[in-house]
Image 1 (cartoon, rainbow, N blue to C red):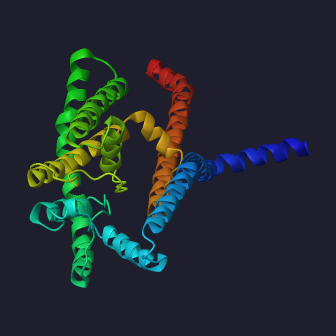
Image 2: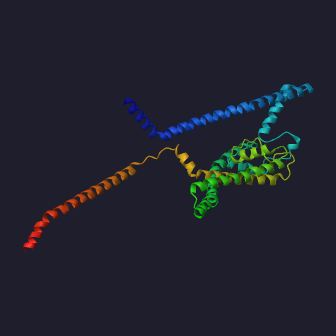
Image 3: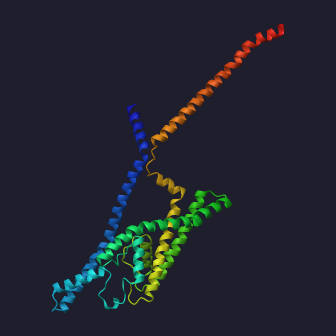
Length: 336
């Protein structure tokens, strides 16, 4: 008996805090996913890092052996200065002197990466004034960008998702959840083709040192706003039509980000995903005013039910009185 009571109480506790338990499972799964990613990246990339370190040490030692007049301290000083400049997007190589990082098209490309929070990191402000302006520009520009993207995506969604699904629902009579899932899958295929596969082929042709995988990697890292900065187009030596190329990339990043948001919003509107999200949300607590309204409605309904019940009782009692009185009345009438 006690086991049954304790078991039923445990079930009630679990049922009452179901969303909390789901949320805790979600947090645990996310932490495990982070650890899984760290283990895989470490296992895959650590050997390559060690190999590259060894190659650099060998090259450095060979250079010192070939140039005995140069001390290791002076070489270290020069390399440190060169790497610092490289981190700011300035190269010491002769064939890279023709590429400027802060001409208009490059600055426009930098502004688009800042406002979209992509941030490749290959070009950064050098002066204190530029750093201060970047902070102010981002504080105003990032919310402005979110507002702009939300308005654009809302209008595109109306014509690319909601109206087609509604039209096909009326035309074919199919269920909206099924139509929504099919439409989302088709839209995802189109977006992947137009903003990932085709641009990856184009980048692999225009960028001499990129293969298809590296180009596809750049497209995904950019449009997902990760922006690692290890691959940046238009930074090659003797890049033809560099300014026009940078303008095209800026347009591609903004339009691709809009397309990605449209796909994500389309999937978020699926009934299946809405049910999945609700599993981890807190249940909305009714306010005191809402509870008072519910109680008032309940009392009103109860009073109406009581009045209806009393009326039914009176109605059932009333014919008995008529029946009991009808003989007298009948007799009186007949006597007359």
